[in-house]
Image (cartoon, rainbow, N blue to C red; front, side, top):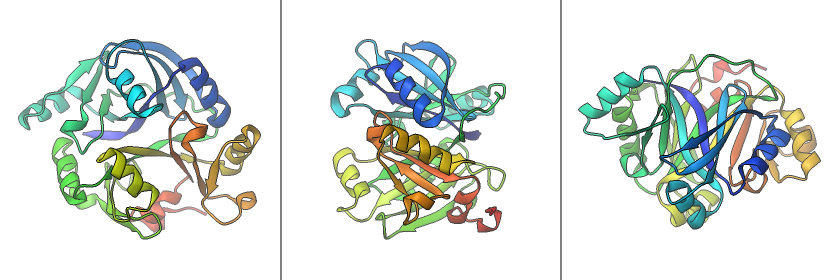
Length: 284
């Protein structure tokens, strides 16, 4: 039912300032302004490759303000495209799941998932891609609970084929889990389910504070060096995938302080297949 990861919603104090940041760092371009009654927010929506970032500035009492007051700026919701929202609504109803609708989008609350708010959008016409980003392909749902139960939940909620998921583990970052891939090998898009296994790790500390929740997102780019240049020009904090920042060509992580609370991973095009069960799809 889900086609791809197509957006994230980010709570920000000043949507115009946030839009300027995303333009400078990632080459994001303005798309439109759109209020959200459900979130009680004014949104500046910017294009990031084939994806969108919704920069949500609270306009009154509601989810956006609650998040800002409790946690500060940062991720509010993970966003996906569904082939047919009518079919999705019918499927969710069969599973006894109530959803909310606002402005043509469908929302699920964190209590209905493994701790992350979800916004689902119908397909839109393809746009000309600009800037260094190809688009988002992953959202990470960190867990203190059992990742297998979370995988079963998402397979049920979104009619995903669990036999196509790809197991993951990392001693370095302290987690175990799976990649709930939507349509491999056609696309990389997925929900990463990461159960923290090391309380001292960054992920472990996050889970201790926030529990099961939305942690970060990942995007692909054809131009890692160009992105590094943008980051360096702003004095932004980032971590290279390899040992030498000056020679980085494969990927990096952008610190939340550089993107209004968003921890963003970046990988060069196709590289993520290396840890997604199909390393043969990685191109040089």
